Image 1 (cartoon, rainbow, N blue to C red):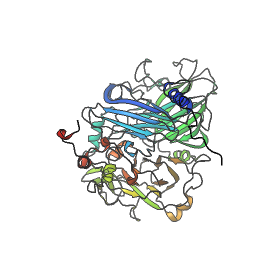
Image 2 (cartoon, rainbow, N blue to C red):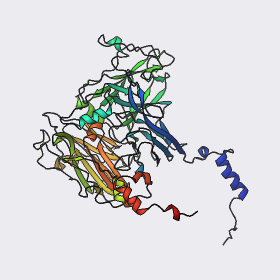
Image 3 (cartoon, helix red, strand yellow):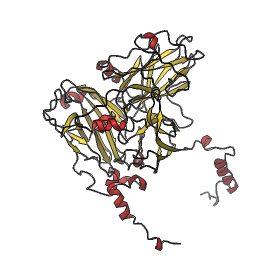
Image 4 (cartoon, helix red, strand yellow):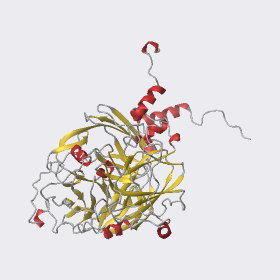
Length: 595
């Protein structure tokens, strides 16, 4: 047998030089070596005066910006955000929408679920790894702070040296939102009043935080509209999409709306849809896309139209009677002047209640070849009936007749410290009465509040059937986009009426269902999803319409909490967990400390 020399493979001087070269950049950098990076941010959240739609108002901004700063990272990078609350009188958290948080469930940013709210004047550090390329965003997840403007983009590129499975020359990032002139605090009080004071429809659709109220940049096509007189430096000046002719552009589109479902179209241009919620899909061409709150897409466009013209970008309201004008901006073919308006009117938004058109778009989304396939069978199936109800005269949204009311102690802390009195230990119902009539208002409109948890075994394969139903008023049923934290899920199918295993089971797509983190249920219909409970933590699953969640439209899932590692103390130091922390780590007597 050959004898191996008992010495280092590389001499010490070489190793020292190699380490120094990495640290100080002597010819070799971390980037060039392909190492993941740490992306470090220090943010301050505060209210500030702003004019998102040319009307001055109060917005919740980050470091003086609205929307907040864009985070950009590569797969494998660690994102660190030191968030300081400068709101004076209210707490704050930030949810990183679409990020799995594997190993860091405490960083999911859901108040009363994964962490305590960050108190005024305090700083909390989020630290997490981004593990999948895609189009994501972040937003407030306490009360209705997303409606107040607490949101921004989060883009994850592939690992350095790797490419996307489609070609493009440049990209444009769009974050869509809706905006009210009424303060969020007034909205919250109205929703919790008896009788309810509904928030109404938004005044404006914002594109990257910019819109125009009571005027239009396309007024020349409609005598009933007033032409906007805008200057380039104004906060409400349109976000212009500058492009060069004969190029391919990736347009990332994410919707952080509080209420509105939207339709996106570009005049004279077809959209090739290639990504949905951070997952590659089978590309397909369309003239426009419907996008619901919480969803994100990437589309490719080719700038092959007459280069002497500019073209409209139009974002209109779907699924609700549109009392909000479309958001408009310009696809500006350089070197044309931005002031050169398109020769044709903006694309017309499809009829708001043409749900067949919405379904036709949604049903075209399939997983790209090579995507993970769902397990063929489930271990557990839960039915979640979405209803509007009353409780002591207050209007609520409920799931299986339970309206979610979050406890003061975060679930993650309560389970970690085994605080069994912190929330209801009885799980919520896993189904609803078989004879429930989804086509009429509930016979018994009364509901209860609850904070129980659906607990799953690690590795359990879970099906959820989201079932829509009639609201309190006759002949009314609304679209609900549901978002799951901590997981992607396979969308197995959609259907009309009440789900029937005998009839609908064979319709489920187990061949190429898309992976998503947000999915819609259509009026009077059902949606079936499947996921694997393989991410230790406690996770929200809820309607992404802000006022609906505020009124109780959500549930809580938990799995493998015993496997969760160390949790930062600041994430737990509230409610019953604060006392548990003190009992487990009693403060030292200063007189007995080591010198």
